[in-house]
Image 1 (spheres, rainbow, N blue to C red):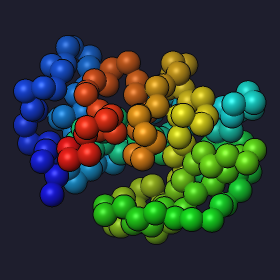
Image 2 (cartoon, rainbow, N blue to C red; image 1 turned 60 degrees about the vertical axis):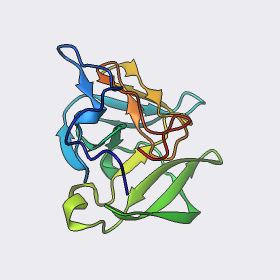
Image 3 (cartoon, rainbow, N blue to C red; image 1 turned 90 degrees about the horizontal axis):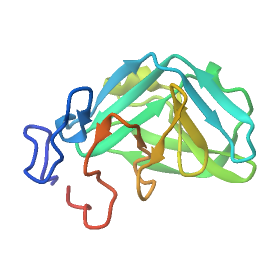
Image 4 (cartoon, rainbow, N blue to C red; image 1 turned 180 degrees about the vertical axis):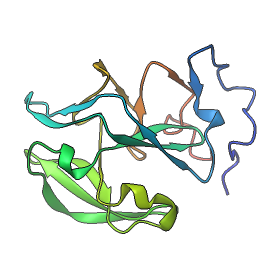
Length: 166
């Protein structure tokens, strides 16, 4: 059972300033929210992998947003790789690689709540260079959740050492 449900911000959470979002104000279960900012994803070789102004952020208590881009945003072919994982909210995820590195995932036929991201891709910011409105994002520690930390998002964030019970 998760200790924090997004109902109230714990006393150790950073207080947001105007223009900032606290991940402690995000809900549980998570929410899917359309985002019109310019998203660009580049491989470590500099090749642009995806580009769009149509994304969906998944917002979940204590975690930086996970950005999903539509399949038509992809500018290269990603290769499906073996393995999958299961999310209690979204369902089964499949993984994809580029240049031999697993760098993206998607949900095919996710739960009804997340039908908007059906077939959309999300990228690990630790493996690719990911940008929101031209600003490179910071990867969420540990990659388990794949969150993108942008300047307006504040924590502390799930994934750091000692946060497994959040």
